Length: 105
Image (cartoon, rainbow, N blue to C red):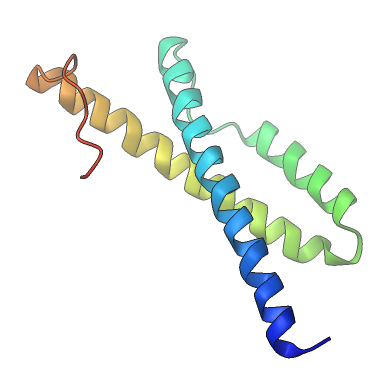
């Protein structure tokens, strides 16, 4: 197969990964809301370890790379949750909670 074709395939895969990543981050924000409503901490180390162990089992000879990828995804998800909750708190404090968000920011 030609290098150009392989790179095109990588580009297609990257587009899919980005779409799934954005969907995952939206879900993370919903999880943050749930955790706040139920007074749960953002960090759940037991769940993270279960996910990482499962990923390693499924990834075969690419386990070390898959573990790093999912570790990074979870770190980004936690950061997204913290930011999401702090923005909601700032909006509530400023009285803008019921106003539509400006999605261009």
